[in-house]
Image (tube, rainbow, N blue to C red):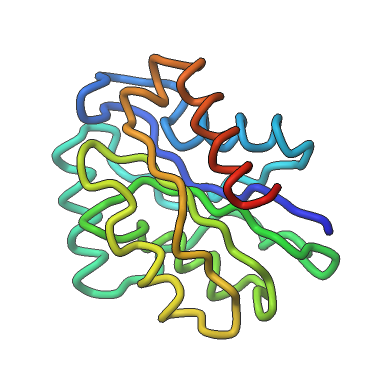
Amino acid sequence: MKSIVIYFSHTGENYSVGNITVGNTAKVAKEIAAQTGTTTWEIKEKNPYPTQYTPCIEVAKKELQAKARPEFIGEAPDLSDIDTIYLGYPNWWADAPMIVYSFLDKAKIDGKTILPFCTHEGSGLGSTAKKLAAAYPKAKVELKGLALYGHVAQKEPDAVKSAVANWLKQLGK
């Protein structure tokens, strides 16, 4: 079985960690890739989200309410030989950012297993996995995803390593 880690991560001002140059979700994505021996593909927005925290979450809320599909840079990678997608994102307003949906709308994910993981500051995975499963019923979305606090992802690499290892073990990976 072949896999890939696909993720969206925000840099700039983040809740409880200040200004960062490597996003919280990116740090978790890189650890998953290291432990699974797979590659990563980052979803990058064509029109960047604001780097300041409050304006960023305001934009995210408006996108969610409008069910917007913001553009991402480049083309979705060829997933024809991929069985499993580790899908990472920050939990914004109890959902994955709309740019993640933009990516999934364009990627060929039917029949793929999607293993969600997210970073947050108190809401955990929430209902993000259920929302993804409902939006993409032809994919197999695992509802028991990995959720890590953003401040842990940013400041505690050993905790991230351990959490990822435990999650992968639970998944049988």
